[in-house]
Length: 110
Ligand code: 5GP
Ligand code: ZN
Image (cartoon, rainbow, N blue to C red):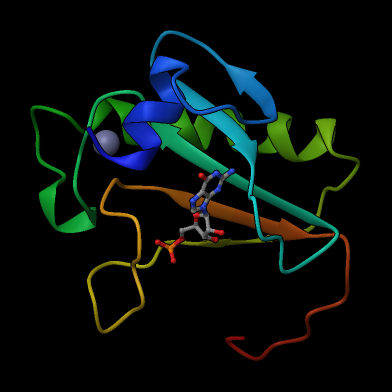
């Protein structure tokens, strides 16, 4: 099992901020901003390259909940990041979206 599947299964502890039948959101262990949440589908999808018509329901489930998750952390302005593949620095090969906020980031990519 990958690290995030282990977190979803409860085998590795995490600070959960939202959970339902399709998705889990938890605090990043190494936050880069005052708010840094990871949102994952419960089903293992390796990366954005592996989203298809059979599994894309979890993508809408994630984006439908992101505003609520952000609001629960006290922010309504944030950056959503998905790293897809090695060149983009994807270290955990389980599709995830970073919600980053709580600071002024400006217009630059990073
Ligand atoms: P990536 O670089 O793949 O886009 O992002 C992976 C993120 O997962 C990193 O920001 C890293 O800090 C976070 N992460 C890796 N392992 C764990 C863990 O065991 N628990 C939590 N909460 N976050 C993790
Ligand atoms: Zn996984």
